Length: 432
Image (cartoon, rainbow, N blue to C red; front, side):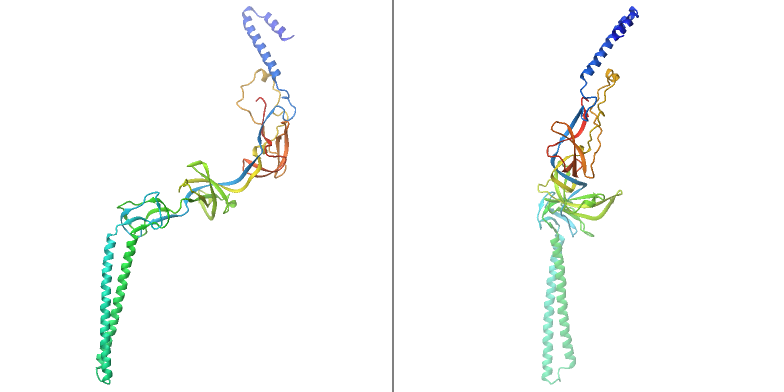
């Protein structure tokens, strides 16, 4: 008995009250039959099996010539190549300040000046003492000449008298006076030297009242104002901080102990700062220090890089994230790493014929294509199998020898791969 006869027999055994509901049931059954027929009619050919590519849609990417860089990441802080702190050896009151933040200064330029009133008074006092000491020297020299002349006269008289006159005591007294005069002269000269040293010291302090720039550079900080009091009793207070040359900067980064073995002096690097997230700055490693720093149990080694800052875009104190290039291969043939991870799905794995129940009561539409299972296929330590699309747009496996990888692309050393070859990176079932 076919479906129509079954429906008619059912209608004969129902009363008039249920005929309306039965008609609705008939309509629903007819619609379900039509839907099933339509599904079978539109079912793609080959969806039930065939080759491994039956019913599959491939996503490909071209083999390309790229630069492959293996990097080590580290973070650090930018600093001037030479930073100088300028202080004062004298205590006193700041009389004038001649420079401000960001001012360009030259070596020997006056940055600030202390009040020199007291120092000037000390200079005048020292000069007066020096004049007095020099006068004492001249007086002592006159005494020396006088006593020397008297001694010579007595010696001449004694010679002429045959040693009878003058008395020996007079001769001894004359000699003692002459010796005493020489000592007074030496003492007076020593006093002159002492006062001269005191004057020189005061003049030196007077010259230090002018705070001078020791280098050509830029004023980074200024910690004084006019009228401020400077106390230099125990150590020189820092008044200014100067950067010698901001056109050259250094970057101090902390390299993890796991990576320090491949980081050496002379390696190239690039880094970014938050102020210019889209811009990369070039750097070169100048020094890798042996001293370790431990922070929260993490051991790092300070590494110094130098970089150009001709446009003054970089500023001291900026935090930078650096990528140190430990290995590189420029302009080499490479493929995406996804192509090396892809493996062709087994026949029928994603193309099973749906059941009648699924055809009659299809579930809700899927929100996206579910990728096929991918398995890495290798042919040795450095040999792998990748799939490409041939001239007929069909998949074909190719064995290649791989080289350097940066985690995104891998260099192809040998194999039937050329620039522009379409390599398969994933596959999904058609219509899904």
